[in-house]
Image (tube, rainbow, N blue to C red; front, side, top):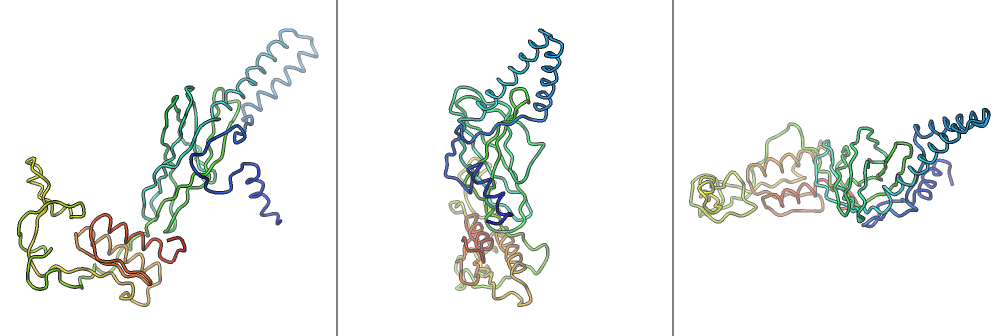
Length: 324
């Protein structure tokens, strides 16, 4: 085994974490590690000096004070360990984000016992956050902690290994445990900052001049559907307490938009094409226009609404990735 592989192998053996774990993750006693803090080491050195001085000068009160403080430090080891052992961890939610924006992972920590857990801190192991806030978990309660990570590439972002630690009660001892919940966040590609406008080609929605989904002449109201654009909602009727309605329009000029990979300039690279198509998907969604997306090896039919936008952005985010 190569030397550069030794630290990773030692970590897997020592901390028993080699990748995403099935939930719920139970923090048993073999997963809790305890070591003194800098303050604890300083106190231990001070106690050694006090013990030597008491022996040298035969100070009874010195012995009493030394062993009293040492017993308090010894008891704090027990309390720090009990503050972490027995907790359970389950993955929460991770909403998709655009590349360049921070990803937020929800991690649920459950305390099955009656004893509250105090002064806990949850941080990514590889992205230490010294200023992370402390939190408590009351007895028989679960709390959700948010882990924020930067995003630098499109695709799936796996939640890394996390460290749950505590210095409770006196700051002399650090008890911690490492684990990795099976949770990942989808990172959409970043849209192109500037470029050509949304293409308007495609087939007319009502080529025969009949009623369609155009946006020229008002034709009446219909029942509201979740996929309808908010711009077409009859807000005045809703404000009067009436049911949700959507405005219908007549016209033969409304067209479906085809966002086709092959229609882009051949000089554009893969990531530039994905960025432009991402921007067009967002523009078409804001306009309430039905659109289809054609990628190499995959074609998504026309549609509109939040579900269709997510489907298209997901296809762009995972284009060229093995895990689709």
